Image 1 (tube, rainbow, N blue to C red):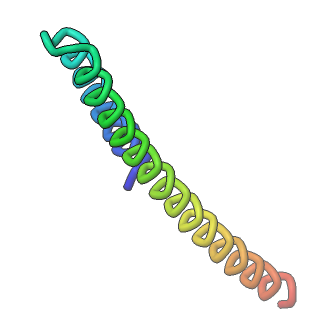
Image 2 (cartoon, helix red, strand yellow):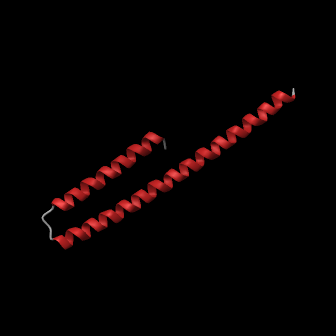
Image 3 (cartoon, rainbow, N blue to C red):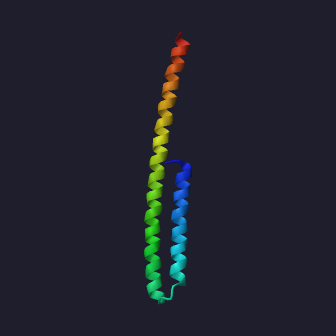
Length: 84
């Protein structure tokens, strides 16, 4: 996934979370019930953030491996050129 797509997805998740929290705080429920709902939404957000972080780590690892492979290939080509 591209960096722009990751940023957009994170923005959508954050926006949804802010909207959910705002809706819960403005809802005409009792305080205890609202706190339970808010706590549940925060836990869901934590799981979503954890998933995004894991995807980000995987993407970085994949990119790092690709860069390492490309550098090694370029080094081999350079050695062949210099050896001629």
